[in-house]
Length: 175
Image 1 (cartoon, rainbow, N blue to C red):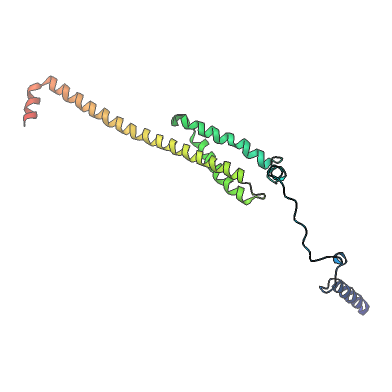
Image 2 (image 1 turned 90 degrees about the vertical axis):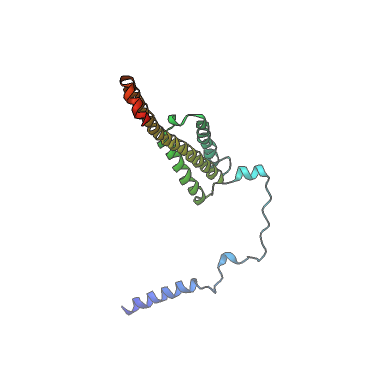
C-alpha cells in the first residue's frame, strides 16, 4: 500500500513540475517584443463588405426589410383613427421598445437594427396616442349629444305647454 502512495506522489510532483511558471514553454522559444505590423487599411466599401453586420449578413438585410413596417405605420398617419387597430399598434410599440434595447445587448451590436426598431416604437406610440384621443373624444361627444338631446326635449315640452295654455305660461314668465 505504501508503494502506491509513493507512485501517486511522484506522478503529482511530475505534473506540478511541468506546470511550473518558471519553466519556458516550447512554443515561445523565438518570441520577440516587437509588435506586429498594423493591418492594411481598408476602403469604406471593403469595410462594409467584410463587417460582421455588413451587406453579406442577415444583420444588414433584416433591418432594411423592417423599414417597410415603419413606412406602413407612417402611411397610416393619413388614415382616420377609427380605422386603426389599437392592439396592433400596441404590439408595434412593444416590439420597437423591446428590440431596440436588445440590439444594444447582442453581439455584434447592430445600430441599424436599433434605429429601425426605435422608429417603429415611435410610430406605434404616435398611433396609439391618436387612437386613444379619438376614443376619448367619442365618449365626450356622446355625453354632449345626450345633453343636447335632453335640452331639446325640455324645449319641446315648454313649447307644447305654451301652445296648450299660453296665458298660464305668460303669467309664469312675468313672475
